[in-house]
Length: 413
Image 1 (cartoon, rainbow, N blue to C red):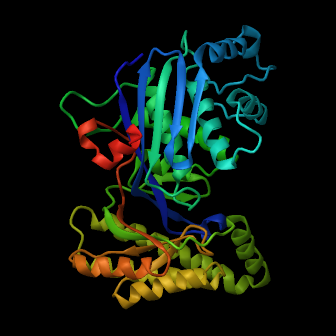
Image 2 (image 1 turned 180 degrees about the vertical axis):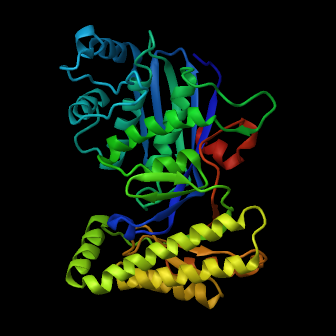
Image 3 (image 1 turned 90 degrees about the vertical axis):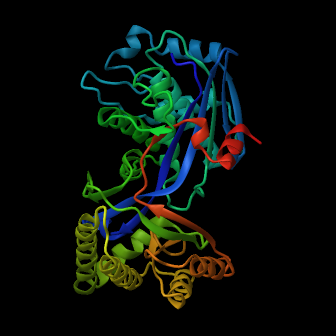
Protein backbone atom coordinates (compact mmCIF):
# COMPACT_ATOMS: atom_id res chain seq x y z
CA UNK A 1 0.00 0.00 0.00
CA UNK A 2 1.45 3.38 -1.00
CA UNK A 3 1.95 5.89 1.81
CA UNK A 4 2.70 9.14 -0.03
CA UNK A 5 0.22 11.80 -1.14
CA UNK A 6 -1.17 11.15 -4.62
CA UNK A 7 -2.26 14.01 -6.91
CA UNK A 8 -4.29 13.06 -9.99
CA UNK A 9 -6.17 15.03 -12.66
CA UNK A 10 -8.50 14.11 -15.53
CA UNK A 11 -10.07 16.24 -18.29
CA UNK A 12 -13.69 16.88 -19.18
CA UNK A 13 -15.03 16.45 -22.69
CA UNK A 14 -16.91 18.22 -25.43
CA UNK A 15 -18.54 16.84 -28.56
CA UNK A 16 -16.88 18.47 -31.55
CA UNK A 17 -19.28 17.07 -34.16
CA UNK A 18 -21.96 14.38 -34.38
CA UNK A 19 -24.25 15.13 -31.44
CA UNK A 20 -27.77 13.75 -32.05
CA UNK A 21 -26.64 12.07 -35.29
CA UNK A 22 -24.69 9.59 -33.14
CA UNK A 23 -28.01 8.35 -31.66
CA UNK A 24 -28.94 7.26 -35.20
CA UNK A 25 -25.74 5.31 -35.89
CA UNK A 26 -23.59 8.14 -37.24
CA UNK A 27 -20.04 9.12 -36.20
CA UNK A 28 -19.40 11.50 -33.30
CA UNK A 29 -16.07 13.14 -32.45
CA UNK A 30 -15.42 13.75 -28.75
CA UNK A 31 -12.39 15.69 -27.53
CA UNK A 32 -10.78 16.06 -24.12
CA UNK A 33 -11.46 19.47 -22.60
CA UNK A 34 -8.62 21.05 -20.63
CA UNK A 35 -10.89 22.05 -17.78
CA UNK A 36 -9.88 19.38 -15.31
CA UNK A 37 -10.93 17.57 -12.17
CA UNK A 38 -8.20 17.23 -9.52
CA UNK A 39 -7.91 14.67 -6.74
CA UNK A 40 -5.64 14.56 -3.71
CA UNK A 41 -5.39 11.24 -1.86
CA UNK A 42 -3.58 11.10 1.50
CA UNK A 43 -3.17 7.70 3.20
CA UNK A 44 -3.18 7.93 7.01
CA UNK A 45 -3.75 5.84 10.14
CA UNK A 46 -6.81 7.50 11.68
CA UNK A 47 -9.09 4.51 11.08
CA UNK A 48 -11.34 6.74 8.94
CA UNK A 49 -12.13 7.19 5.28
CA UNK A 50 -12.77 10.87 4.59
CA UNK A 51 -14.29 12.26 1.39
CA UNK A 52 -14.45 15.98 0.64
CA UNK A 53 -16.08 17.40 -2.51
CA UNK A 54 -15.94 21.19 -2.07
CA UNK A 55 -17.69 21.96 -5.38
CA UNK A 56 -20.93 20.41 -4.15
CA UNK A 57 -20.52 20.86 -0.39
CA UNK A 58 -19.86 17.22 0.57
CA UNK A 59 -17.79 16.26 3.58
CA UNK A 60 -18.29 12.66 4.75
CA UNK A 61 -16.38 10.28 6.99
CA UNK A 62 -16.75 6.53 7.56
CA UNK A 63 -15.23 4.24 10.14
CA UNK A 64 -12.89 1.76 8.43
CA UNK A 65 -13.58 -0.95 11.03
CA UNK A 66 -17.31 -0.75 10.28
CA UNK A 67 -16.69 -0.88 6.53
CA UNK A 68 -14.28 -3.77 7.06
CA UNK A 69 -16.99 -5.81 8.79
CA UNK A 70 -19.43 -5.00 6.03
CA UNK A 71 -16.86 -5.87 3.38
CA UNK A 72 -15.83 -9.22 4.83
CA UNK A 73 -19.44 -10.24 5.43
CA UNK A 74 -20.03 -9.98 1.71
CA UNK A 75 -16.80 -11.76 0.87
CA UNK A 76 -17.78 -15.01 2.56
CA UNK A 77 -17.07 -17.96 0.20
CA UNK A 78 -20.76 -18.48 -0.57
CA UNK A 79 -21.01 -14.82 -1.63
CA UNK A 80 -18.67 -15.59 -4.50
CA UNK A 81 -20.87 -18.33 -5.94
CA UNK A 82 -22.68 -17.53 -9.21
CA UNK A 83 -26.07 -17.85 -7.51
CA UNK A 84 -25.36 -15.18 -4.87
CA UNK A 85 -25.56 -11.43 -5.42
CA UNK A 86 -22.18 -10.01 -4.32
CA UNK A 87 -22.18 -6.45 -2.99
CA UNK A 88 -19.08 -5.38 -4.83
CA UNK A 89 -17.87 -5.34 -8.39
CA UNK A 90 -15.53 -8.23 -9.11
CA UNK A 91 -12.87 -8.89 -11.69
CA UNK A 92 -13.39 -12.09 -13.65
CA UNK A 93 -10.50 -14.35 -14.60
CA UNK A 94 -10.39 -12.53 -17.94
CA UNK A 95 -9.86 -9.22 -16.10
CA UNK A 96 -13.34 -7.90 -16.91
CA UNK A 97 -15.06 -5.79 -14.27
CA UNK A 98 -18.64 -6.75 -13.51
CA UNK A 99 -21.31 -4.06 -13.50
CA UNK A 100 -22.95 -2.70 -10.36
CA UNK A 101 -26.45 -4.09 -9.85
CA UNK A 102 -29.46 -2.17 -8.49
CA UNK A 103 -29.23 -4.34 -5.34
CA UNK A 104 -25.60 -3.25 -4.81
CA UNK A 105 -26.52 0.41 -5.24
CA UNK A 106 -29.37 0.08 -2.73
CA UNK A 107 -26.99 -1.56 -0.25
CA UNK A 108 -24.49 1.25 -0.79
CA UNK A 109 -27.17 3.80 0.11
CA UNK A 110 -27.45 2.12 3.51
CA UNK A 111 -23.66 2.18 3.92
CA UNK A 112 -23.42 5.83 2.88
CA UNK A 113 -25.76 6.95 5.65
CA UNK A 114 -26.97 9.99 3.71
CA UNK A 115 -30.11 11.87 4.77
CA UNK A 116 -33.29 11.20 2.77
CA UNK A 117 -33.38 14.79 1.48
CA UNK A 118 -29.81 14.65 0.14
CA UNK A 119 -29.60 16.14 -3.38
CA UNK A 120 -29.26 13.61 -6.20
CA UNK A 121 -25.87 14.98 -7.35
CA UNK A 122 -24.42 14.67 -3.85
CA UNK A 123 -25.87 11.21 -3.27
CA UNK A 124 -24.55 9.79 -6.55
CA UNK A 125 -21.08 11.27 -5.99
CA UNK A 126 -20.84 9.63 -2.56
CA UNK A 127 -22.22 6.29 -3.79
CA UNK A 128 -19.71 6.25 -6.65
CA UNK A 129 -16.82 6.84 -4.25
CA UNK A 130 -17.95 4.10 -1.87
CA UNK A 131 -18.60 1.69 -4.73
CA UNK A 132 -15.11 2.14 -6.19
CA UNK A 133 -13.36 2.20 -2.80
CA UNK A 134 -15.00 -1.01 -1.55
CA UNK A 135 -14.74 -2.79 -4.91
CA UNK A 136 -11.13 -1.93 -5.75
CA UNK A 137 -9.89 -2.75 -2.22
CA UNK A 138 -11.99 -5.92 -2.08
CA UNK A 139 -8.91 -8.14 -2.38
CA UNK A 140 -6.92 -6.27 0.29
CA UNK A 141 -6.66 -7.88 3.74
CA UNK A 142 -7.56 -4.59 5.41
CA UNK A 143 -9.30 -1.52 4.06
CA UNK A 144 -7.03 1.55 4.09
CA UNK A 145 -7.59 4.80 5.99
CA UNK A 146 -7.64 7.58 3.39
CA UNK A 147 -8.36 11.28 3.09
CA UNK A 148 -9.70 12.04 -0.42
CA UNK A 149 -10.42 15.52 -1.75
CA UNK A 150 -11.79 16.08 -5.28
CA UNK A 151 -12.13 19.56 -6.76
CA UNK A 152 -13.13 20.43 -10.33
CA UNK A 153 -12.93 23.28 -12.81
CA UNK A 154 -15.87 21.67 -14.63
CA UNK A 155 -19.40 22.88 -13.95
CA UNK A 156 -21.60 19.87 -13.04
CA UNK A 157 -24.61 18.98 -15.17
CA UNK A 158 -23.43 20.97 -18.21
CA UNK A 159 -22.75 17.97 -20.46
CA UNK A 160 -18.98 18.40 -20.10
CA UNK A 161 -18.16 15.00 -18.62
CA UNK A 162 -17.72 16.14 -15.01
CA UNK A 163 -18.97 12.84 -13.57
CA UNK A 164 -16.65 10.82 -15.82
CA UNK A 165 -13.62 12.93 -14.85
CA UNK A 166 -14.56 12.30 -11.19
CA UNK A 167 -14.84 8.53 -11.74
CA UNK A 168 -11.56 8.43 -13.70
CA UNK A 169 -9.68 10.32 -10.97
CA UNK A 170 -11.07 8.01 -8.28
CA UNK A 171 -10.28 4.83 -10.26
CA UNK A 172 -6.72 5.95 -11.06
CA UNK A 173 -5.93 7.02 -7.50
CA UNK A 174 -7.47 3.99 -5.76
CA UNK A 175 -5.87 1.48 -8.15
CA UNK A 176 -2.50 3.20 -7.64
CA UNK A 177 -2.65 3.44 -3.84
CA UNK A 178 -3.42 -0.29 -3.53
CA UNK A 179 -0.59 -0.99 -6.03
CA UNK A 180 -2.86 -2.70 -8.52
CA UNK A 181 -1.09 -0.37 -10.96
CA UNK A 182 2.26 1.40 -10.35
CA UNK A 183 2.64 5.13 -9.74
CA UNK A 184 4.26 6.34 -13.00
CA UNK A 185 5.65 9.54 -11.43
CA UNK A 186 9.40 9.23 -10.88
CA UNK A 187 11.55 11.39 -8.61
CA UNK A 188 12.10 14.84 -10.09
CA UNK A 189 9.19 14.55 -12.56
CA UNK A 190 6.34 17.06 -12.54
CA UNK A 191 3.72 15.05 -14.43
CA UNK A 192 3.38 11.61 -15.98
CA UNK A 193 0.77 9.17 -17.29
CA UNK A 194 0.13 5.46 -16.91
CA UNK A 195 0.89 2.77 -19.50
CA UNK A 196 -1.71 1.69 -22.05
CA UNK A 197 -2.49 -1.47 -20.05
CA UNK A 198 -2.93 0.48 -16.82
CA UNK A 199 -5.11 3.06 -18.55
CA UNK A 200 -7.35 0.26 -19.82
CA UNK A 201 -7.90 -0.92 -16.23
CA UNK A 202 -8.55 2.66 -15.05
CA UNK A 203 -11.08 3.07 -17.86
CA UNK A 204 -12.89 -0.19 -16.95
CA UNK A 205 -13.32 0.86 -13.33
CA UNK A 206 -14.25 4.44 -14.24
CA UNK A 207 -16.99 3.05 -16.51
CA UNK A 208 -18.44 1.21 -13.50
CA UNK A 209 -18.42 4.48 -11.57
CA UNK A 210 -20.32 6.07 -14.46
CA UNK A 211 -22.84 3.23 -14.31
CA UNK A 212 -23.56 4.03 -10.67
CA UNK A 213 -24.25 7.65 -11.69
CA UNK A 214 -25.98 7.26 -15.07
CA UNK A 215 -27.25 3.68 -15.18
CA UNK A 216 -26.49 3.00 -18.85
CA UNK A 217 -23.74 5.37 -20.09
CA UNK A 218 -22.16 5.10 -23.55
CA UNK A 219 -18.62 4.89 -22.19
CA UNK A 220 -17.48 7.83 -24.32
CA UNK A 221 -17.04 10.31 -21.46
CA UNK A 222 -14.85 8.08 -19.29
CA UNK A 223 -12.84 6.96 -22.36
CA UNK A 224 -12.10 10.59 -23.34
CA UNK A 225 -11.16 11.45 -19.75
CA UNK A 226 -8.88 8.41 -19.48
CA UNK A 227 -7.14 8.58 -22.84
CA UNK A 228 -7.35 12.31 -23.61
CA UNK A 229 -6.91 13.68 -27.13
CA UNK A 230 -9.81 12.97 -29.47
CA UNK A 231 -12.03 9.91 -29.92
CA UNK A 232 -14.33 8.70 -32.64
CA UNK A 233 -17.52 7.00 -31.47
CA UNK A 234 -19.99 5.06 -33.60
CA UNK A 235 -22.52 2.40 -32.61
CA UNK A 236 -20.71 1.48 -29.41
CA UNK A 237 -17.22 1.37 -30.95
CA UNK A 238 -14.64 3.84 -29.61
CA UNK A 239 -11.30 4.58 -31.30
CA UNK A 240 -8.61 7.17 -30.56
CA UNK A 241 -7.56 9.63 -33.26
CA UNK A 242 -3.81 9.59 -33.84
CA UNK A 243 -1.94 12.76 -32.83
CA UNK A 244 -4.87 15.22 -32.88
CA UNK A 245 -3.80 18.87 -32.54
CA UNK A 246 -4.60 20.83 -29.39
CA UNK A 247 -7.16 23.44 -30.47
CA UNK A 248 -7.70 26.67 -28.53
CA UNK A 249 -11.37 27.39 -27.89
CA UNK A 250 -13.80 29.48 -25.93
CA UNK A 251 -16.23 27.31 -24.02
CA UNK A 252 -19.46 29.12 -23.20
CA UNK A 253 -22.17 27.92 -20.85
CA UNK A 254 -25.45 29.71 -21.65
CA UNK A 255 -26.74 28.54 -18.25
CA UNK A 256 -30.03 27.64 -19.93
CA UNK A 257 -31.18 24.28 -18.50
CA UNK A 258 -32.33 21.61 -20.92
CA UNK A 259 -33.54 18.03 -20.98
CA UNK A 260 -31.30 15.80 -23.08
CA UNK A 261 -34.01 13.14 -23.12
CA UNK A 262 -36.62 15.57 -24.50
CA UNK A 263 -34.23 16.92 -27.16
CA UNK A 264 -33.27 13.42 -28.35
CA UNK A 265 -36.97 12.49 -28.53
CA UNK A 266 -37.68 15.66 -30.51
CA UNK A 267 -35.12 14.74 -33.18
CA UNK A 268 -36.49 11.22 -33.37
CA UNK A 269 -40.03 12.56 -33.83
CA UNK A 270 -38.88 14.97 -36.54
CA UNK A 271 -37.14 12.09 -38.33
CA UNK A 272 -40.34 10.04 -38.23
CA UNK A 273 -42.43 12.97 -39.44
CA UNK A 274 -40.07 14.14 -42.21
CA UNK A 275 -37.83 11.15 -43.03
CA UNK A 276 -36.78 12.41 -46.48
CA UNK A 277 -35.72 15.76 -45.00
CA UNK A 278 -34.17 14.75 -41.69
CA UNK A 279 -32.34 11.57 -42.78
CA UNK A 280 -30.17 13.55 -45.26
CA UNK A 281 -29.40 16.06 -42.47
CA UNK A 282 -28.09 13.23 -40.29
CA UNK A 283 -26.07 11.87 -43.22
CA UNK A 284 -24.63 15.34 -43.80
CA UNK A 285 -23.67 15.69 -40.11
CA UNK A 286 -21.94 12.31 -40.43
CA UNK A 287 -19.98 13.63 -43.43
CA UNK A 288 -19.01 16.73 -41.41
CA UNK A 289 -17.65 14.51 -38.62
CA UNK A 290 -15.66 12.42 -41.10
CA UNK A 291 -14.25 15.51 -42.84
CA UNK A 292 -13.28 16.99 -39.48
CA UNK A 293 -11.57 13.72 -38.54
CA UNK A 294 -9.61 13.81 -41.82
CA UNK A 295 -8.53 17.44 -41.33
CA UNK A 296 -7.48 16.88 -37.72
CA UNK A 297 -5.41 13.90 -38.85
CA UNK A 298 -3.62 16.07 -41.42
CA UNK A 299 -3.00 18.95 -38.98
CA UNK A 300 -0.74 16.92 -36.70
CA UNK A 301 2.13 18.92 -35.29
CA UNK A 302 2.16 21.74 -37.88
CA UNK A 303 -1.38 22.94 -38.62
CA UNK A 304 -1.88 25.44 -41.44
CA UNK A 305 -4.23 28.42 -41.34
CA UNK A 306 -6.20 27.02 -44.29
CA UNK A 307 -7.04 23.94 -42.20
CA UNK A 308 -8.48 26.20 -39.49
CA UNK A 309 -10.67 27.84 -42.15
CA UNK A 310 -12.02 24.39 -43.08
CA UNK A 311 -12.75 23.66 -39.41
CA UNK A 312 -14.64 26.98 -39.19
CA UNK A 313 -16.76 26.10 -42.22
CA UNK A 314 -17.59 22.71 -40.73
CA UNK A 315 -18.61 24.39 -37.46
CA UNK A 316 -20.95 26.77 -39.29
CA UNK A 317 -22.56 24.04 -41.39
CA UNK A 318 -23.08 21.73 -38.41
CA UNK A 319 -24.67 24.49 -36.33
CA UNK A 320 -27.19 25.17 -39.12
CA UNK A 321 -27.96 21.45 -39.37
CA UNK A 322 -28.52 21.22 -35.62
CA UNK A 323 -30.90 24.16 -35.79
CA UNK A 324 -32.77 22.37 -38.58
CA UNK A 325 -33.05 19.31 -36.32
CA UNK A 326 -34.79 21.51 -33.75
CA UNK A 327 -32.12 21.45 -31.00
CA UNK A 328 -31.07 25.09 -31.24
CA UNK A 329 -32.08 27.83 -28.79
CA UNK A 330 -32.22 31.63 -28.74
CA UNK A 331 -29.30 31.68 -26.28
CA UNK A 332 -27.16 29.64 -28.68
CA UNK A 333 -28.16 31.90 -31.59
CA UNK A 334 -27.03 34.85 -29.48
CA UNK A 335 -23.73 33.13 -28.71
CA UNK A 336 -23.11 32.56 -32.45
CA UNK A 337 -24.05 36.15 -33.32
CA UNK A 338 -21.77 37.64 -30.65
CA UNK A 339 -18.77 35.59 -31.70
CA UNK A 340 -19.46 36.15 -35.42
CA UNK A 341 -19.31 39.91 -34.77
CA UNK A 342 -15.73 39.28 -33.59
CA UNK A 343 -14.90 37.15 -36.66
CA UNK A 344 -15.20 33.84 -34.82
CA UNK A 345 -17.21 30.68 -35.47
CA UNK A 346 -19.29 28.76 -32.90
CA UNK A 347 -21.63 25.80 -32.52
CA UNK A 348 -23.53 24.12 -29.73
CA UNK A 349 -21.91 21.11 -28.11
CA UNK A 350 -23.87 18.27 -26.56
CA UNK A 351 -27.64 18.13 -26.41
CA UNK A 352 -28.37 21.75 -27.37
CA UNK A 353 -31.54 23.54 -26.31
CA UNK A 354 -29.29 25.85 -24.28
CA UNK A 355 -26.35 24.29 -22.47
CA UNK A 356 -22.87 24.91 -23.87
CA UNK A 357 -21.27 26.09 -27.09
CA UNK A 358 -17.70 26.09 -28.41
CA UNK A 359 -15.90 28.80 -30.37
CA UNK A 360 -12.73 28.03 -32.33
CA UNK A 361 -9.77 30.38 -31.77
CA UNK A 362 -7.40 30.52 -34.74
CA UNK A 363 -3.65 30.89 -34.18
CA UNK A 364 -2.45 34.48 -34.27
CA UNK A 365 -5.64 35.89 -32.81
CA UNK A 366 -4.77 38.95 -30.73
CA UNK A 367 -5.46 38.54 -27.01
CA UNK A 368 -7.40 41.85 -26.75
CA UNK A 369 -9.86 40.48 -29.36
CA UNK A 370 -10.28 37.27 -27.38
CA UNK A 371 -10.87 39.26 -24.19
CA UNK A 372 -13.41 41.49 -25.93
CA UNK A 373 -15.31 38.42 -27.12
CA UNK A 374 -15.28 36.89 -23.64
CA UNK A 375 -16.53 40.18 -22.19
CA UNK A 376 -19.35 40.36 -24.74
CA UNK A 377 -20.42 36.79 -23.92
CA UNK A 378 -20.24 37.42 -20.18
CA UNK A 379 -22.42 40.52 -20.58
CA UNK A 380 -25.10 38.22 -22.09
CA UNK A 381 -25.22 36.41 -18.75
CA UNK A 382 -23.13 33.48 -19.98
CA UNK A 383 -20.14 31.81 -18.29
CA UNK A 384 -17.07 31.74 -20.52
CA UNK A 385 -13.70 29.98 -20.32
CA UNK A 386 -10.67 30.25 -22.60
CA UNK A 387 -9.27 26.74 -22.75
CA UNK A 388 -8.20 24.00 -25.19
CA UNK A 389 -9.40 20.65 -26.50
CA UNK A 390 -7.28 17.62 -27.33
CA UNK A 391 -5.92 17.75 -23.77
CA UNK A 392 -3.93 14.94 -22.08
CA UNK A 393 -5.95 12.25 -20.34
CA UNK A 394 -5.72 11.19 -16.70
CA UNK A 395 -2.34 12.18 -15.25
CA UNK A 396 -0.42 12.07 -11.97
CA UNK A 397 1.26 15.26 -10.72
CA UNK A 398 3.88 16.51 -8.32
CA UNK A 399 2.59 19.17 -5.90
CA UNK A 400 4.81 21.83 -7.48
CA UNK A 401 3.32 21.21 -10.95
CA UNK A 402 -0.15 22.32 -9.83
CA UNK A 403 -1.25 25.95 -9.92
CA UNK A 404 -1.54 27.57 -6.50
CA UNK A 405 -5.34 27.95 -6.90
CA UNK A 406 -5.67 24.18 -7.44
CA UNK A 407 -3.46 23.39 -4.45
CA UNK A 408 -5.48 25.79 -2.30
CA UNK A 409 -8.78 24.23 -3.41
CA UNK A 410 -7.49 20.73 -2.57
CA UNK A 411 -6.14 21.95 0.77
CA UNK A 412 -9.49 23.56 1.62
CA UNK A 413 -8.07 27.08 1.81
